[in-house]
Length: 191
Image (cartoon, rainbow, N blue to C red; front, top):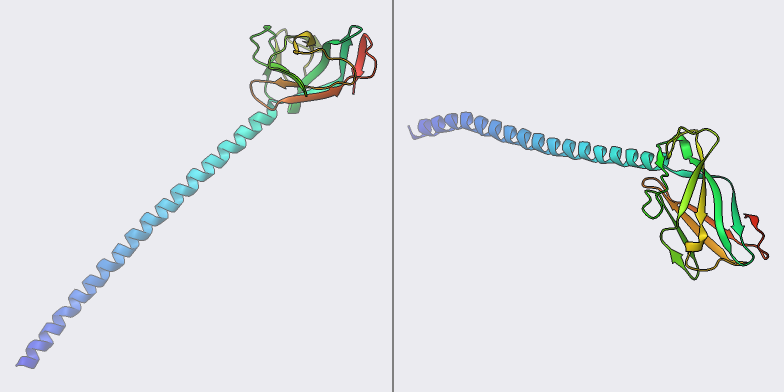
């Protein structure tokens, strides 16, 4: 009789063991689902951040100034007084605001050399060729910028290397580095 009771007990455990196994398998499936959801969410988030970086880089590249032609210096007998150069929009991209409000510009032009730095020079802009009566440099347009070098913080004489930085509100900075010649003429092309 004791053996019969023992067999009955084992028979009942078989059903419980199957139920316990099913519960454990369901728990594994739930944990795996949560883990998969987390991995997918992280992947989607990182791809969105990657997309934002690509669009930001594209906007920067499309809002970049490009130097067209020579840099011309105007001078008196002792110092460079003005620089004149032409710019266009690289990659036919976004419009760049070149409103010359003297001292409160959206686009800033600065000067630096080994001995001086000036953060904001006065400058003016004029159309060259095609233009549509605004101060936005758009695709297909070219503007001539004249920079007043008397505000550079030093006298720019002979054999002097200097850098002009044109900083638009968006896009890359246009860096122009030039050296003055041995003799200052009234109009010179700087190389």
